[in-house]
Length: 209
Image (cartoon, rainbow, N blue to C red):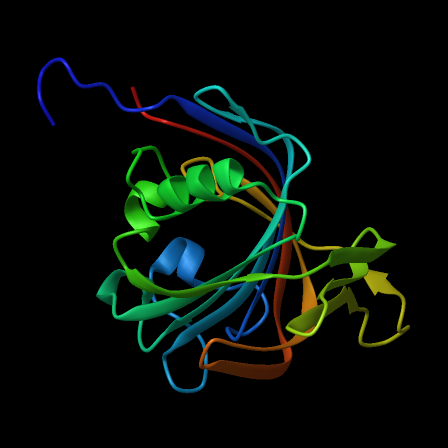
């Protein structure tokens, strides 16, 4: 990039819905390595953007889902990703999200994550969220869904609340944790896991200029 060229400024604020094949709590976020049975990281993650902008393009209200299959730990790379957006998402919005999510515009977490996978495709499908708190279902029509719930007290069966706080977390700083089940099939990716990690978080991401 030349001295006169400037990256497009961007910022995304909203809610994240993270399902992955780690054991609940996802130690990747603080120890760096998956707790899945085979050491892989496979994820179904929703981003609901409440307020967002990339240059002059308004991204507020955009919903996106990333389906990502890493063969080992995220930092080992080699992943494949499929992104899902709603049919009403404009070409300009898709272009902005593509540049953000592949790290082209800088700023964490995508400046780091975007170097660890290749994009296998983009799917347009209706994205819905049903339920409340940690008891909810995130769906992409014809693609897949993730269903989460709270931990349960092993004695009483009552909801058991758990949070992970990561002051230096680069994806999120506070995650509300539970147990989830998810499956997704798109553009050659085929994931299906039960009773694995499910985390809800709020995000505020921006370029690093």
